[in-house]
Image 1 (tube, rainbow, N blue to C red):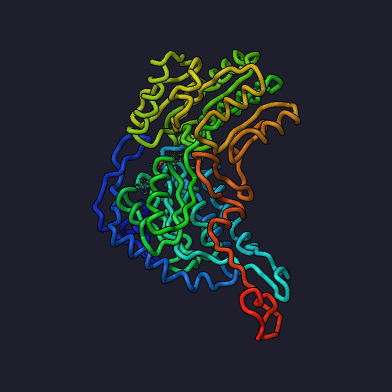
Image 2 (spheres, rainbow, N blue to C red):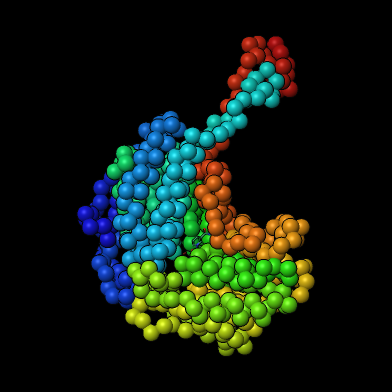
Length: 494
Ligand code: NAD
C-alpha cells in the first residue's frame, strides 16, 4: 500500500511484515483485487506495545512546547504529502477524490495543527488553599500506552482523532486501523516519524479485530482502550477491558434524526438531508438517517429530496464529477440492500434509489424511503449506507419524542427559523451534537462523542484530554508544627 515500505506493521519507527498471515485486499470501487496485506501476530502486537512503553518516559517528559513543535512539523509534512494521502484514501475506501481532497485530508491536517496548539493548553487548577495551612494543585499526567482501534469509513481522520489527543497529552500509542483500510494510517505514522516525532511514539498494527484488536485491548501494558466502531464491538471491548481494569473511550454507532419543523426553510432542509445522508456514501456515524418532517411539508420535502438524490452522479470516485463513490465492500453493500428490501417487505415505499447501479464496484444509489413504521428495523438500526427514511409528525412534542426514540444518541439536526424552538430542540434532543439548520459540519475545537448506545468520551477539542490524562491532586503543607491540629481526631497531641 505504501510504495516505499515493506510490510504493513509500523513498529518502533520501522515497517515490518506481520507474522499473522497475508490476506487479499480488494479495491471497492472496481471490485478488483489490489495488493495483499500482511496481518500482525500476537507477538507483533506485543512488540508494538513494548516499543510504545519504551518511548513513553522520554515523550512524556518533553515540555508541552516541545511536543507542540514536533506536531507543527508533522502538520507541515502532511501538507506536503496531501495529494498522496488523498489518493491512497480514495483507493482503499472507494470514496470520491473530491471528498478525500476537500474533507478528509484538510480536516486531518487541521486536527494536527489544533492539537499542536492544544498540547500547550493542558490545564489543571494552578493552586488553591483548600484544606487549611496547605496549598493544593492539580497535575495532569499522561496515562502511558494507549491502545486504539479504528473503523474503515474515514480511516485517515479516525487515525488522527485517536492519535493526536493521546500524543499531545504525552502518551504513546499503538493504533489498529480497520484491516480493510490500513494504508493511510501507516502513512500517517511514517510522516510523523519523518517530522521528527521519536520512534515508538506512534505504532500501527494491522489485522483482524478478533486476533489483533483483542490482543491489543487485553495487553496488560495498555492503560486505555480507545475505540471507534460499532456498538456491538464497543460492548465487547468494555467487557475485555474490565479484565485488566483499564479505561475505555468508546465512539460507537449512530442513527441521527433530522427534524424539519413547520416553519423550516424546506429547500435548505432538503439540501441538508441529501448531503447529510449521502456523505461518504452514508457510511458516516453522524449521517442523517431519519427525517421527521412536519406533515404540512412532508410532500414537498420528500419530492425535493428524491429529485436531488436522483440527480446525483454515482460511480468512478476518481472522476471529479462524481458525487458519490462506492461502499466499502460487497458484504456491506449486501447488508444495505437487504435492509432496504426488509423495509419494502414490511410495507414501506422507495421514493428514490433502492438499487445498485450496473457498475463493477460496490455502489448503491442514494435512497429515500417513506411509509416505514417507527419501530421497524430501517428506522431503528444502523444501515451505514446512503439511505434516508422520512416520517411525518404533527406536533413539536411528537417530533422530539420520535427523534429520541432510538438506542443511539450521537448527532441530530433541527430545522426551524424560530430561535426559541431551536433552543428547546437543542436542549431536549438526546445526542452529543445538535445542529440547527445544518447537518454534518464539525470543528477541531468542538467535541465529538455520543450519548446512550453511541458511547462516551470525546474526540477532538480539549475535552478529549479528560480521557487521555490522569488528574493528580498534590497537597503541599505549610504548617511547620510536628503535630497538626486535625491529627487530634486520630490521636491527641502528646
Ligand atoms: P467494527 O466495530 O466492525 O470495527 C471497528 C474496528 O474494530 C475495526 O478495526 C475492527 O477490526 C475492530 N474489531 C472488530 N471486532 C473486534 C474485537 N472483537 N476486538 C477488538 N477489535 C475489534 O466497525 P466498522 O464496521 O469498521 O465501522 C462502522 C461502525 O463504526 C459503525 O457502527 C459506525 O457508526 C461506527 N463509527 C462511529 C464513529 C463515532 O465517532 N462514533 C465514527 C466512525 C464510525
